[in-house]
Length: 238
Image (cartoon, rainbow, N blue to C red; front, side, top):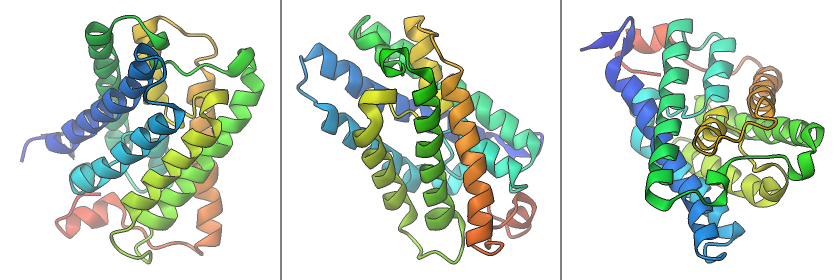
């Protein structure tokens, strides 16, 4: 099996491809909504994001773990569930996939809708920082409880996570963009050249995801999660 260090190349490609599809579908819906004078609607955009996340988890989760989000990857690394090397190459792949998707969307649809960039409403960066932290905390808590902890009911994680993304995007999208994902924000920012308060969309998701790790470790009483080494010993990939 080809690998980058100890990380299989197919896992890296799955992370890049998954993030590409997530951004292409979700951000594409934002841009098409602007292009079509609101035909997709805010609710429709939220459902697209949630649905594509759920679909990708079921499609690629067994190949890479279906992170598609640097905040998720860094939370797993912070918990000691994946090695630093895998975390680094995953984050790079996710960012490249997101940037490629956004650049292709700009080429296909033009310079519309700020390329789907996430910006704090009325430049209220402190509000966005707080809300994005809470949103990502909730999302990561659902990830740990429904898809990571092996005591959870099997097969429902993708649906639970997708619904969480959709609900949070619907509730807070008009205020912060409901990114919860640094790569999702990076791609459109690059394509549009809009970097105002971009740091918020890195700091808040990473902080929220790390907080979720601490809280779920307490709630789950040392929850049952296979480390990368134990998964490899069993012939599986995290």
